[in-house]
Length: 254
Image (cartoon, rainbow, N blue to C red; front, side):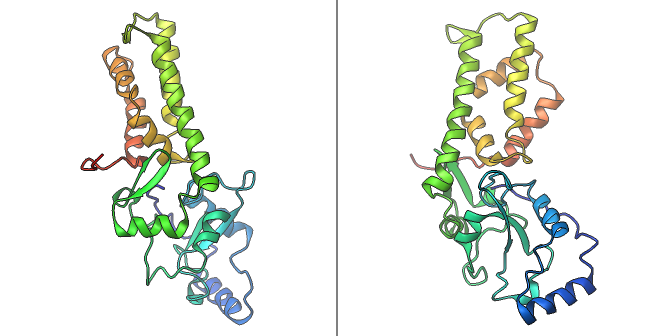
């Protein structure tokens, strides 16, 4: 889960449109939110990902559903309120159900910064705060088959790639002299891997956290810097990794 910025309200959600469609929902429970232009606008809020678990939506079995953060059953007047409509996977939406976020608040990634409440380790979410703990529980973010298993596969893949990079370009636990073509290939591998942890891509919090916590990553970064291969582009990628990552708290007792 990463912090999201709510984009401006779409023009078609005029006050008059929202009023008439809300009245229609209250009267006959019509799915007034289930229209193509609105679904497209909501999907873009989280870069075509679930705003909670960050799986890619509308691929495979991950069908996008519109989550009413304040449930429409309890707050029908907010059924089309911009900011109350969030893109969600079916798994997260079903887990959240009609949960009363007023009585028992959970993280709204368009308002709250998940980094202040959650951290990731071994493909599992852990809490820093009561808000984080309740979010994990309500959304069932540590369900093994739905969430931990795909996260674990991604984490292992990233760690394997970084270990492979290290062993392919080092000798006796340090970088060996590299030809210019080898340096170019190394740069492209690292740049491509870092790009996977940027906010627009699926599981960016997991990917960014895994890269930055990897044993080999700082050694690779140090080599790129010392060799003059580190540039503004890859520095911007690193800054985005820091933004997306959910690191273990520094005061965490092992």
